[in-house]
Image 1 (tube, rainbow, N blue to C red):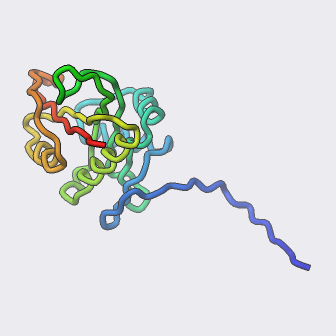
Image 2 (cartoon, rainbow, N blue to C red):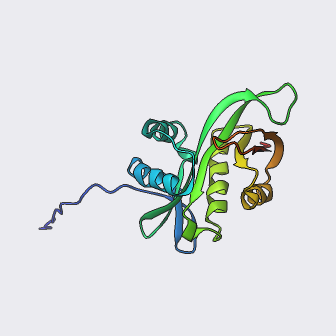
Image 3 (cartoon, one colour):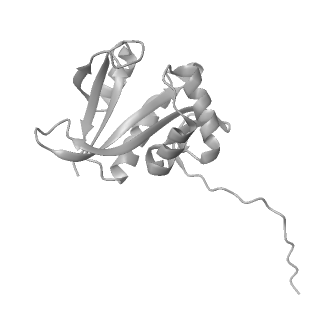
Length: 179
């Protein structure tokens, strides 16, 4: 007679790693990641959002709300949303657009390709939702960020005067998808 031993196992959450960069994994954000994501935002960026805002973006577009982690610790994130509006490329086009709301990597983990990997995987997530284009705003002084986005196919479409609360201008950058 076969004896079966039952183990008390905690429910396991299956997380798919989208990309691996050295010891860093890029995966979809989970609700349990929201507090670490907010902490990264507070440490790295002057713009902050309400708890509800993070939750709403996660439920709206989980395919493009991603976390970078090393040994189970979140060290970066990107969050996006979708919207409908005038195209950044077509004169009269009304399109479905992805919008990179925020992307950040902790200072000690920058210049390792993690930000690039987050943006690349967010592009894939936005394309899953059949967006026609993806856009973002970036501080004009963030030359490294602008260069990264240009390498990934984004084009500066316009300069937004005094876009940020501190009065700094932003570049609106966008990329168009061909299906």
